[in-house]
Picture 1 (tube, rainbow, N blue to C red):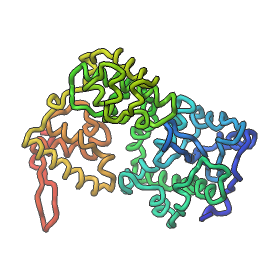
Picture 2: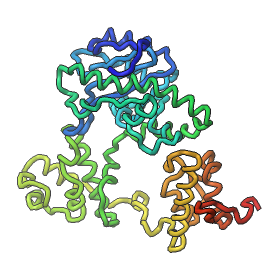
Picture 3: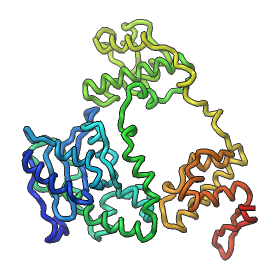
Picture 4: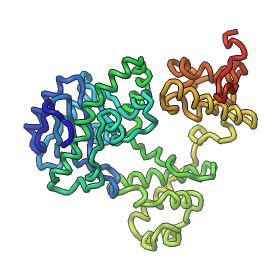
Length: 399
């Protein structure tokens, strides 16, 4: 394995409850732990957890959650109930989802190095291998990346590859933290980390599943049927542990909502469904969902696009200028543009919206929003000097 150094003790694969409990008892007193998972989900609704990797600055281990009789409770308690230990991930959204599925909670407090990289000038979605190269100066072996993690036994190359995801991270995290402290940008990330840890991001409510499906109609009857069908498909997928698209594809669901069959025998004629649906049990449940559908209430209808603030033709040009300003400002302070502002906020600002915009609050206002507001209010412009684009203030925005 590459570059762990003599200080890092790498345990053998943990397959029993006692060894795992002892490890977690030690890690429960550490300031931070680095966490990663390996899973399979190509053929299932729920991700199948196949391996958990964990490390601090002194020891690291891979844990086999598929080992017979292993009790993961100490590890899960450490993840979701110990507020004294910071949990460090890289691009941890799917890892957090797995913990949520197992516990109904998310790891907290947490730190995501991919998110932090945005504040340190490393781009919007830096990959783990590039992060390792940037901070540690070597290329990691990606050979086991697309392995079947559910197959047993795991070989040494698989385990070495997997455990590298946390051993390298345990070296990188302190360096990133030090740099954030020196630049004063740690507070910039608090909101992003809390958003990542919000359990609502990982809760799949069947009553909201219809929002995944695109339909052109805004008729309450059509959307009511789509909501009923979305709920039906979500429950079928969860119950059978199959991907949603293996139950019914989105476009078929949209067609059924817009052109509902009168009786189950008509399902065999629907594009995307086999003839068997005309008489099988799942077809019967689909028809029951359609028959129980009610028109969507007015307060649940999605907002009309034409009721959103429209910048108009001139406003669209202003939005383009704001995007140019964002690019310039992000380059000046060496952060990823997406951390400073989202496109929706820029378009809303150009359309005259002033309330509820993240760029007009807190550190984003100080770093970008003040100048963005000055630009749309005619107090800031662009000039070219010696071939370089400059921002010029036309009047004091405080006047």
